[in-house]
Each structure stands twice: as C-alpha cells, then as structure tokens.
Length: 121
Length: 113
Image (tube, rainbow over all chains, first blue to last red):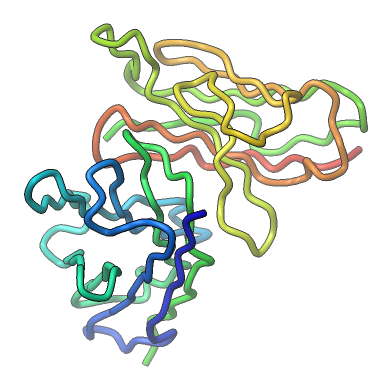
C-alpha cells in the first residue's frame, strides 16, 4: 500500500519561497509506472494541478503554465521523496497542498494528507 | 486549458434514492487511439483528501462500491449513485487527464434530504 507523508512550513511570507516535501513509502519515486504530482485546493480556485515529476529512463517534469516559472518539483532518490518549491508567493497561493501518486495516466490513486500553507506577513 | 463544468453545484437527496451528477468538458476528452475517455471522478469528505472513485470515465477503482457508476463520452459525463447511503455525503469532483494542465470541475456538494 502506497503512503505519502507531507512536511513543510505552514506559514510563508509574501515574496518568499514555499517548500514542501512528500515522502513515499510502498513505492519508489523512480518507478517507471507512476508519476508524482502536486495539487492544491483553495475556496477561490478549487482543485488546481501544479505539476509532476516522473522517471522513464530519464527524469521528466511537467508544470502548469499558470505557475509560470515560479515552480520546481524535484525527486530525491536517496530519500525516496519529491519536493515542491514555489517562488515569489502571494496571498493567492494560500491553499491546502497535496502530493499525489499518478497511476499510469492521469488519475491520482494515492494522496497525501494535505498541508495547509498560508501566505501572510 | 480544458474547462470542466459540473452541475448541479449542490443537491440534497433522500437515503436510498438515485443521485446524478453531471460534468461537461470544454473540449472532447475522448481518444480514438485507445477508445478511452480521459475522465476521472473523486469523492472528498470534510478534512480528507479526494478519493479516487472512477477512471476512464466508467471504470470503478478497486474497493469502490458498485452503487457508484460513471458514464458518458466526448464532452458529457455522469456520475450516478444508485441508492444513496449516509456515508456518501461528500463533495464530488470530475477531472480530465486528456492533457496538461489537468483540470478539475468545481465540485458538487451532496447532502441528505
């Protein structure tokens, strides 16, 4: 059974960097049959897919164009986890952030518990 | 982006009754290369992450009760609960995975009448 455990700061100041980590158990971040996603949820924006990382002989990343160049998702094979960094945050980035395992193609069959991140000075 | 629109936004149904939730995509999410619709449904209960119910528009995830079913093709999809149970109270979301960015419907809140 795959389990995802999230960690990271819950409060970030405007213009600073949001950083979250998702630790994987029961699977490998290097799996060639899964992708590892970040999705966020807020009352104003609903559920919003941010991006993913996956390994298919080499590492790939896909990011939402709406994140522009602010987002980085990195795998860490030594710790079997992946991370999210979102730069230059504003109060609009306040949300619950979820890491997920995407199976085969597109649907998330395992979700982390969620991390509430508040952007506030 | 593919825009996903759900209806209704909320509904209240009596226990044992049939529930129908609709999801419409702004463009087709059907692929003729594999004859599949790239559409999934999730259930979210308060304080929990979404839970996968259905993928490929109509394939139930393992362990999901068979009172949940999905149908539709192209741009119009339906989630049906045949016989509402108290534990089905939740918000339901559709999501397309035809292309990135993956996009979600705004959710349908289901309550007991």
